[in-house]
Length: 160
Length: 146
Image (cartoon, rainbow over the protein chains, first blue to last red):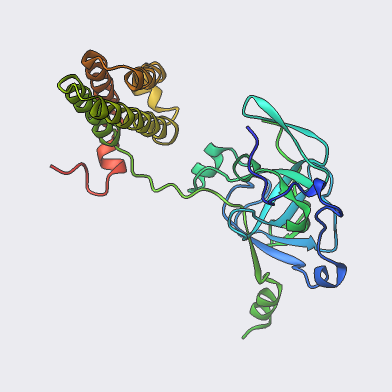
């Protein structure tokens, strides 16, 4: 099963596929964000302050954390890049090929971890499908607060 | 305002990003599946008592729709309400859901009243499992009415 693409036509089929916003727009940020909800536990907890690099215009490599506009809700969300353009992602007994300008984003938390923190199951690409690069906002690269949690953000947990 | 508070408020990000999780309502009751299964039962009864082809065609279409809803409601209970620790109380839980959802598939295709009756019995077993794991108090707003 292939999720419905967010765009009416596949981006790769259009001349000049989907592009990230220009630098002038991107430089406005956000440069730092606060996290709500628990889908990125244990690496990132609700309430964490993160530094974001909003100038990137391509999906960073797998394992990176990205801030993006979530396809279904259009809200700013954070997830981890699982795979980018051209990769095959196992899905529902088969696989999905990720288009050049897309990424497959996953939550770190398992359903059990999110539930233990008082939330429902994490929402990620399993739900909203591959995400086109025009929804990319930035790359979260350092946790600068709250005091006591300052430091590098942990790597992803082992693959599910 | 102290310097410390000024500093904290200056450092606190103004933008929120969501580590988005689903918001489950937490309301579960096998009664929802049972009502759809009772619909199937009654439709099969009415199907047997009416020779009119138009009526029979409608009856089958509606029964298939209701049987599908039974499967949906059972799946929600299985995936969302029941937790691994409930297996201690109900060791045959997975087998029970497998049987019940398979029976719902059978009812979808069958016009035999015995099949519809068997589905009701299996849903009653799911209901017993829901009760044994504290379902009425945990998942209904004020227990099951009545």
